[in-house]
Length: 171
Image: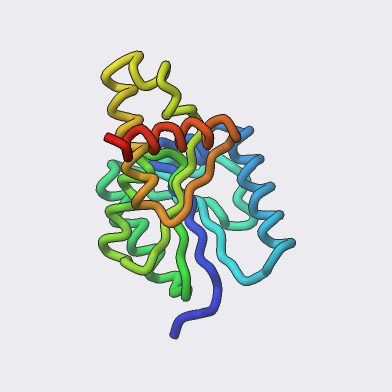
């Protein structure tokens, strides 16, 4: 039987939260506190590839050390066993975390994906600096259409993403 909770799973494929980044860990605890105040109907976990190196009194950090395929399979197993009515994966970037979330979605089709943009990928100066940046922007563009919702950390990013989309749509 499913519980009525919302399962929120923040993927940390690149070990940016679960590793030694105290600032990121502090922000995650703030997010969890805000969620608690807004509604008690959720379960919030950070699924990380790094061994747990933080105070984990709230049990929000779940560690699956090892190679990426093992991490993804362990995450699928963990999410399925939480038995939540609704699930949301937070992909903190439109590359590795987003692609991992897509693989998880294949095995858990009802899961929703939120992709977050922390860089101005759609600024023309960024896109044409290198082939790598171009490919990142292309993957970011693709994620805009696949994700259930998108979070930009600044208004400028949103404006540039809209410009990028318009130019692509008119071609």
